[in-house]
Length: 358
Image (cartoon, rainbow, N blue to C red):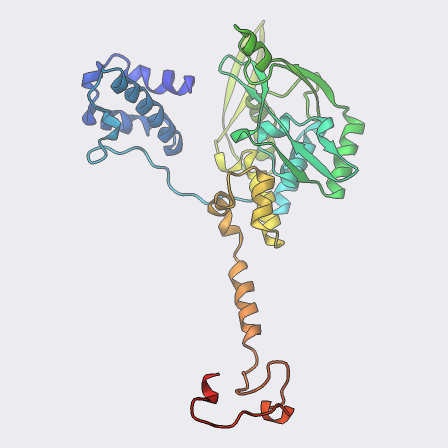
């Protein structure tokens, strides 16, 4: 939030008086914003600005929030995109392009569908190999000052996900070659506590991390994406190198490749691949929703319904089988023998005893 406000709101509207931030000013700012960031990011920045202006209304500094003038100016809306999943060959190619110690991240991403911070926050103690389960209890986060800390997964929801026997073997093999590393970090917030309550809430915890750097440190997701993930994507032919950055330090010159950006091919695509594989195998959407940590199965359906192209066909086939045989009128449903031949006493045809209406 801090980076979005200070990079995209303050430099352009920070010197504007509150009363001068009207629909026209917002239209100009929005047009400029969309030249710098994607529509999805612009939408988040718009929400931050609207929250600030709403506070100004509550404090009596503004009569109304100009962000709510929807007739003349509207919030940026990202184009609806379907979640993208990788084919097995793509997954294997990217996995092969990573350092050996990081390949288990791909296996975990496809096997249990964690978000990137959740994968980097997984501890050896989170795996129950005897029953084939992994407990997603935390994520590894970094604040705007570059300080790491642990906190609950997105939405504050912990969850338990089944682990296939072959994935469990890969995790155990990884731990044999790259033993877990103890990491102690603050919980919830890296800021020093100022009260006893904050001290209890932010009490550091120690986790034996499954994934760590070659120096035995926790992984900084931004550095890992630049130095490990994107080069692996380039090696697999997914991204292209578009430039080079040159740095000189202490008389030494280093060159760093610059790759094109593709949000659809970041670590989260492994989570989509996990869902795609499970849905194609016929797994329940309710179970998947619970394993993914979604708020409800409706959320899972919203993002992943297009991974179920055969669902309607299976239902149609079931209905077709149901109506495969023509019904026979006037027969016992348990038999093909007409009802009158079963020896059942027949009621006389009398007035008031209408057989057709029984």
